[in-house]
Image (cartoon, rainbow over all chains, first blue to last red):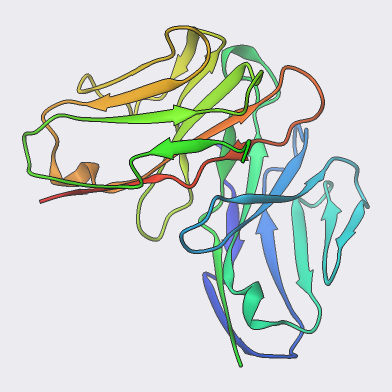
Length: 115
Length: 114
């Protein structure tokens, strides 16, 4: 059973604060790591697909890093805004076989940004 | 809007009733996935279609659950004799054969079994 862990489970920050959360995954047989943002009543939205050790990706105020050797990825949000409030999910895709691409998700980090 | 759509968005049913959900993937996406999310957990894989072929089913998918994708386009997920433990968000996602690993999700169907 693939174990993907996220921490913290929830986070409350003030508008303007910078924040970060962690996704831990098995470091052996690494293929890729996905980050999704899921706002209430909307579809989960892909943020990043990370594949290379040391990778750093950025989308506006959100960035992510990847360490495949130690099995973790960080997601950073700079200057949080209320519209950043969402559940942030990381997911580990299956690399082959009959369930190619199926995602194993962490439990998510629920971010609430207070005005 | 050419995203993934799901219908209905919300379903309230009584225990023992049958329910059916529909997913319309992005056009020409031949891979389609169903996931289920319960409170406090991340989404869990239920089943995977490549075109019309159902290639894998999770052990979470008991005999009361069945999924189809008859023409390789839309998919349906049916739950027979619903139980309170079936209450969850049911998500559908699709992706193309090539062009990256990103899955495109629908907004989900929230099922409440009373």
